[in-house]
Length: 334
Ligand code: SAM
Ligand code: SF4
Image (cartoon, helix red, strand yellow):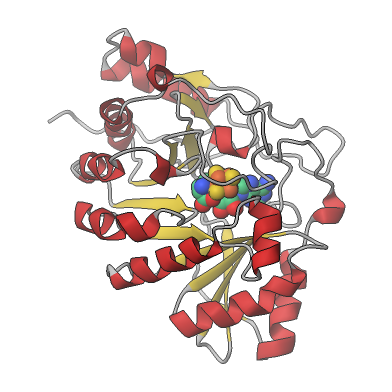
């Protein structure tokens, strides 16, 4: 067994222990804030990291302190046999948690298998409960499949399932209370995330951001005081609250109105093996080529350290110097 490596500390003192892994850029729906409606060119299969290559990268990062990973995409459940990848990652001794973010369209079919493979947590994206709004956002008519996926995940024994909803002004205000009631009834955590400029059409404006504060006000008007949860992990992006007299759990991720860059602990691996130190990074560090050329762990870790060392203090959304990344959300991994 090799000795542990020095942790992944950047020049602002942030420790990196969390890796988001995109396993595909493909998706079975077309949320407008993430993907174009058509004209997509997906990565050819040979350009994607194999599951063994992903596990190798995670093994190297784990020796330097990464202990939590999340599978995402694109839609992770459109790639075959994801449970096999979950098993490979769970077998890495330092990895304490393997989670997944999914749109749940295919979850009813896979929930049991994923649970048996050892997947620890699920975040399920659901922005709207009204079929028209759901279809306007996703450009697909698959709300019943998503609801069935949520039920299947609960039946398979996943606990602390989180619903993630993108908060878009002029579109999803009327979804906030129905989602709060839906989550409360089923014992799900509900998280809203402010709409970020990662849409493929480049049409984002700050006017379209429904702020965390506005959501908090809406929930408080219906359910009474929305109280902060004390002792929340400061490196997690969400600020957590309770509602409905403590029975409901509400998280607010506010990258636009309350950036959390100062405590960021994340790295991101794209489906084709590029390492990013920020969602809004305009630079990437290639791990696929050294991996395929037989690089040893030390060489791979050197690339990772370069990436961490280059991390900037934060994104500049809403400011004049903000540069949109070339990739849109489905190509990065949310
Ligand atoms: N397909 C999976 C899903 O939708 O859950 C995983 C990938 S998706 C890119 C991950 C998360 O990013 C989803 O919760 C999605 O709502 C969120 N997301 C995508 N584009 C976004 C944007 N422009 N602003 C805020 N959140 C966004
Ligand atoms: Fe697909 Fe997820 Fe992007 Fe929606 S947010 S288009 S489900 S990858």
